[in-house]
Image 1 (tube, rainbow, N blue to C red):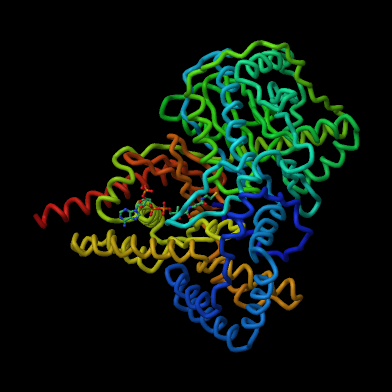
Image 2: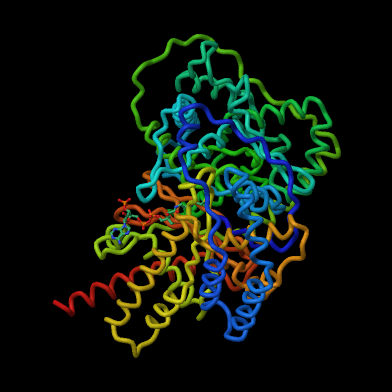
Length: 625
Ligand code: COA
């Protein structure tokens, strides 16, 4: 999803040593090696498509100016030289883009991971209402994640497909036993899943207190949920006090501030050991306190906020270690979900893991395990020096500002799901994206640069590229739709053309022929070659094209859930959706500090746009009969 690369592109990129990458075991290695390598698209193709993509976004004058810059880039030989550099890089590396992308989009990005980078997932509300229910569900969930882990460890996880092509499975090896570590200019990611002695514990957090819980027996079999439940009860019983320093809040800070605080924190040996335990753990489970009750209408939005940031320093934000790749959240009031640190993976593998876990929690308990007494889970201790306390206080203040600034609206569009566009022989994803264009145009009277993530996982170590949803065709449609003088049949034709154009862009993007990562590569190549940044990247049009007021992503899941994430620009929206057969789950976010944006308003316009588009097609069909 996240298009925050737009911001980081404004400054030079410092290349660093690759982070520890996980060596894949045998069968998957063979699968991986069978995957094609990400191509470098032809230079002229990208530049031509870039000019087309700018058409709906910039004025004639700006476009003409950019056209000239693009021509100079080609005729001067600068473009060709950089292109050759990229092609050399593609021959020498497994994937010319993935390491650059990891660094620029994530590890060098300095904004807090909370809200600005880490997505959350809202799971359906569970029907327990007390501590017993909470711990039983958490135990079952842990058992489910360990079951999924066994498929990764035994290499029995089925290879995934998109458009009939096998996908790269590497991200599944990056999400367990891993953690981000803050650094002064860039962060890193550590992964312990393939070390000689991989971790056998998870981290459990309750009342801001962290515990190391061993989840395997000495014979390497995982604990059963009954056993885990008893261990969780012990943790609960020894963490009843609520007056503890919320040490985890440190991880919510701006990355440079957190890096400084991190060095302070781990000067102390005990603190260092505790931090290492969290970093090494397979994943984290956060046992949250109940949040203030809200109406049914607001409930999902409140849970989305809880998943994204924990509710602030007074609520559950101290119950997290936001650098941890995977954190499952189970609250006493039945709210549950997940937050994940984005550097190692995109949403779809996380959603696949969740689907497995949710399915697992629904299975009845078959065997009751003999209750062999297990050792007390280890409490992770922290020495809070005055300096650390001061860092926590500062982090709390910044976090609370962020919490108040996030405006999030989760809603279910109930009128139809994938079924309606499919019955019209249209791509559901493209239909939703065109509806978003209509909604935005109706609100602002103009289109905006729109980012939709496209998977590059057909290629070895592939991550994402950008589908630019604001196109010449989408603009023609939204203008036609708003023009009373345009007949319905013509509107339908414009709608179909816009949807088909979006699907064509999607096909081009997933085949490695989109423009955004190629342009980024050319820019990074210039930085690496120590030549001056070409004019096309210093141009107003480029800045406008990279200012994604709409940052969107589809994260499909079988579970009736939705992923959510923050906007990537101060005056923008984050929109994530899970299209089901008969309905669509949406999460829309914005910042309260921006007077022009409002998540609930965009949600309302989006619902209207989807309905109007369906009615338009129905009416036109009827009038033909
Ligand atoms: N007529 C009838 N059915 C159609 C159709 C048409 N013209 N076009 C598509 N469909 C069907 C598909 O066959 C598919 O069927 P299924 O539900 O049985 O699987 C369904 O509609 C969905 O297809 P579509 O809506 O076109 O989307 P997609 O599944 O191809 O996904 C992307 C499109 C862009 C989301 C996907 O390619 C992608 O890149 N996903 C990764 C995104 C990502 O990484 N996000 C996370 C970032 S953190």
